[in-house]
Length: 134
Image 1 (tube, rainbow, N blue to C red):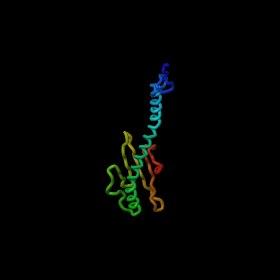
Image 2 (cartoon, rainbow, N blue to C red):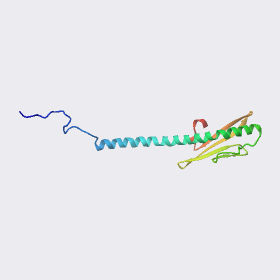
Image 3 (tube, one colour):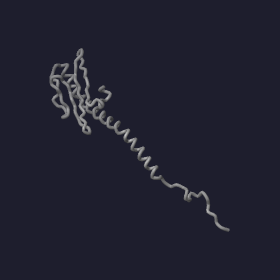
Image 4 (cartoon, rainbow, N blue to C red):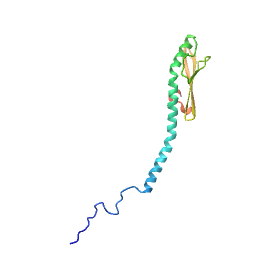
């Protein structure tokens, strides 16, 4: 009696064991589209993070200028970070940094209203402005 081969054992020729080149090309194309869509959002996010850090670095000098403004003393603190500048006449503080060829400038300008110091905030480029400065 002849021995018959067993059918459906998974060893047959019709069974596929991997991805075709077309399937791999489709996956790579989809990944390329996803990267192209997320890259601009990532760069805007990095700008906002950097601007937020620059704004946070101005918190200490901002308190000193506000106290000096109210007491009538010298507006600009003596010791500042090297990236921070202070206008001795207006008390405006400016902090600058670069990110990938883009200069980010954060400028805080004080004004007095009824004995309270209020700060206006300017950030260049505008899309780098965090919510705290809008």
